[in-house]
Image (cartoon, rainbow, N blue to C red):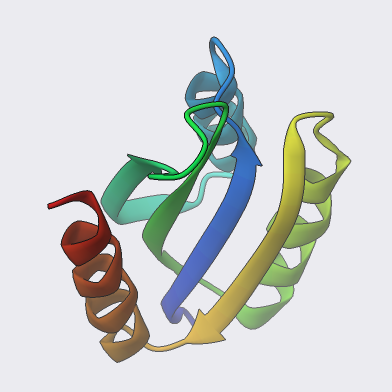
Length: 97
């Protein structure tokens, strides 16, 4: 059964990395409900993305492993539910401001 998952990706702030992340999700037909991309305030070469996805538990595990195979991606962590997405995106927006 499909449900909401929050996935947080830490990666190099490299040209087209966001496009590669989206392509992984599109190939697996995972619905993106929300997406926040950000740059690390201490190092402009590092960044990340926080996404709220609607998919099955098996598929989120596959997506996580596929994202971690991308060269620029340092880590990918997912959480069940959408409340974590709100907490993470608020934390990231406070760091940028």
